[in-house]
Length: 141
Image 1 (cartoon, rainbow, N blue to C red):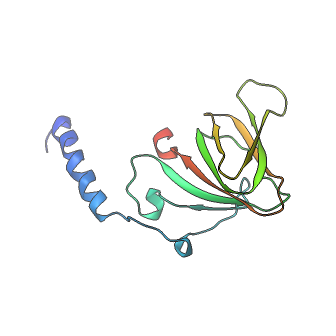
Image 2 (cartoon, rainbow, N blue to C red; image 1 turned 180 degrees about the vertical axis):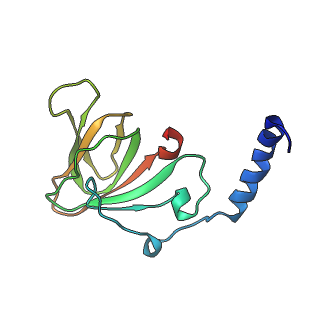
């Protein structure tokens, strides 16, 4: 392939071949749980780092023990679906003052974090809160 256009046309075939070889399923016992300054416990689900061929999105599962909270942090946009537990998130948009807006959540809730918003999640329940998170770090990069 000699020119950029021919290379671009080849992208489709390359990504189709990558997709055929990519992982299609992951089980909880295969997850690599880690602790971060923002998260008590988090694991990647579907992402290039876990062998899935995605086009820029990543999914994770995270937990917050009862009475605990995540660290304040900022990153790209994020969608969070609460699987278990109850609590609230403080979300402060860029340029806003104060602690941020409070959004209460419980099992079945979805929370949307805008791009660049500082946020922190609090578990106010008696059990560990668990949530799925969807981001697009690879696209945002």
